Length: 527
Image 1 (spheres, helix red, strand yellow):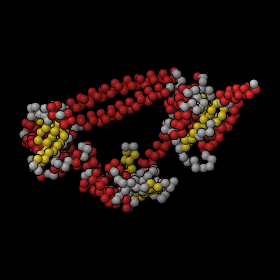
Image 2 (cartoon, helix red, strand yellow):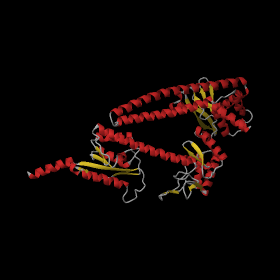
Image 3 (cartoon, helix red, strand yellow):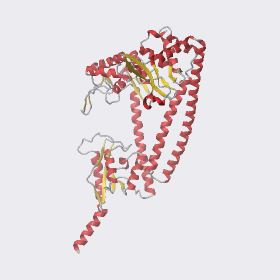
Image 4 (spheres, one colour):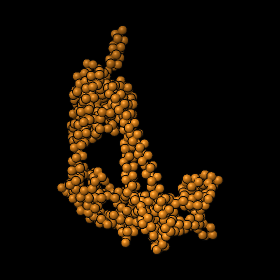
């Protein structure tokens, strides 16, 4: 009887034990290498508190949930994720922290965490801030404390941004890995030229101007055995150089630091460091990168002289026409083939294909006629103007639709916030919904900005008959003397798309107003 009573009492005691997980966090990794650091101090305070509650059955779990060097502004923390998983598995009854902001400095993140605690019947204690989350007053106190924590985090972030901005405006280097071609000065705060790497940078710019292809530039650098920067951090961690890729080279060729300037948040300031690239070479590379980026490098990859590659469309299928080639009796024949017919079979398209040389010659001759026939010139100008006005109408309509959608999202956001306030700490569903609304609104606002810029650019593109005549005049005197690559560039500047009506055997050419203006300005500069 005595043994049974003792066993029952032990079972009751084990059931009443409150398993406490101690969570600690520090925003930076500074000082974590010390024998006794901030995380240890937080854990020691939490263990002392748990020990004072041992009469209530509290016991600290041996597992450590320490996040050193992680911000409280988000939940991307390994120890926190492990803690949430253990809570979901039923291994934790109470979470103990030194202060509320150790768990989170974001009101919405904290709401999600608390919702997770409530779903799993887990209580929450901050050693230095006593409150009871089971009462409305306790939840209010908790929200007030967390709001101040979030406010403090945002103020610190603003101060940091202001400090970085002030340093950038003065042309200073604000830290991090120096760009290829430079090293950080011994005293810090500025860049100094690395002669060997700077020579390689100049050669890269020259090679790109020569080959006009990032892929070919990668191959050239591979053959020379050149790699990205090898660097050792302040903590002694070595970062070995890697082979150059197109992405890395694009970043290098567009980095304004090589002009002796410092870009920061969309603005450019004069730097304290020395430039390693001439401004003329820099500008030539940017123009070439922009052009190749617009057409995906078609000009560079167009080895078989497809003058209209990327411009031809099958009007019947509203599908692009791909450039194709066949060989018969050791002779090559080029075609533009409807992509739908290629994928689904010839029976699905009345256009099918058209000889490439024939259609290219027809388009060039047609453009030549426009440049010499005043009536055709006016008709083309009117068509270009109608296209511009139609584009403006579409942009204005989209702008109006976006404005209405943003107003609807704003009203929905107010409803969600009002509902969350009435119910204390917002649940995970409400928080996710609010985050989704804000993300959609940001996307719509970005699109609004793009539309405003497109409208301004289109309205400023006032093309007149002289512009069109001058742009088309290049076809008569110099067209035959141009290299195929330059011919393809001019055609893509002038023409936006060509619709081929296979059943009727006709072509419809849509001119690119911005390209005509650009070509007109280039010709003016040449003169």
